[in-house]
Structure formats: structure tokens, C-alpha cells
Image (cartoon, rainbow, N blue to C red):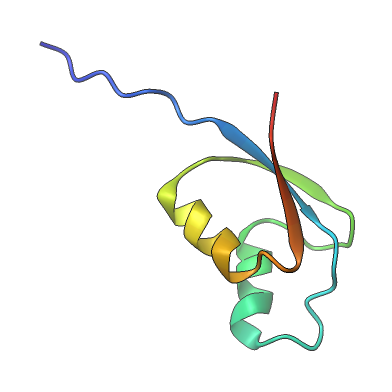
Length: 67
């Protein structure tokens, strides 16, 4: 029997506040998400690792489900 896993949904992540003035870990997390400029948007697959990163920098980004 095949192990069927649901495909992960995509999330749109937009940088809305500058990481300047935050800890180095937050700056590196923003960079790891692929965000380099304010109001830049990236699309990432919804994974537990991504959710953990977003929990750390949730005050700097907005997250919405991609369509």
C-alpha cells in the first residue's frame, strides 16, 4: 500500500517591518526565508520548519495562504 501524504500548501510571506534593531538571529531568519527588502513577497511550502521560523519573526512579516 502506498503511503499517501497530502501535498503541502503554499504560504505567501511579506516583509512589512525592518529587521534592523532586532537580534542577529531574527535578521538571519528573515534572510533564510528569502526576504531581503521591505514589502518583498516570497512563496514557500508550508512545513513545520517554516512555521517555526515564522513564529520567531512573526512581528516582522505577514503570512497568507497562496492561491
